[in-house]
Length: 111
Length: 115
Image (cartoon, rainbow over all chains, first blue to last red; front, side, top):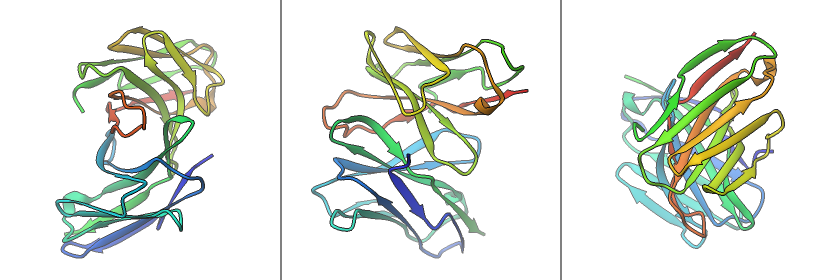
């Protein structure tokens, strides 16, 4: 079963706009990670946020975590055509020694 | 990630055949994983290994087996392939960490089609 569910499933924006993707999960987590997958390629790790953190930044990426709502968001600012990809959240939980992935958001950035 | 190499990249085979997918890594990581990805879905864990003598089932291990031949090598076998095992298969690695706070590094996948 999927621990994380991303919303929206697909998102299309213009270059320069901001893109926001959301992830909800079901059980308490140790940390939450975001990955990017370009078409036909493997996943690439973007950012990790621990359960005791509320916000984290990395370049144009901003991740927030609300453990009371069991949700996270990924914001990509000033998007570029090269940001076109699928984005997945993944969680680790106590007692489960591997990641559980959500179903992903497909982002299309129009030049 | 070129440090995680999967072979073959593409494979077409027939129902009932035995298939082995191979993964090798040069990252020096102890932990290795096999996932499958179906269209429109996230990755689902098949098996994982935290060191050479450790093998664990994931959420969808039925119909699959694995072998951890060395720290750097982790192979996935389909003993008797069936069409619903058609999918994109990924190998991943991570460094050791008790809290699971290490990112995973993925190969570029094997696209497997079973006719």
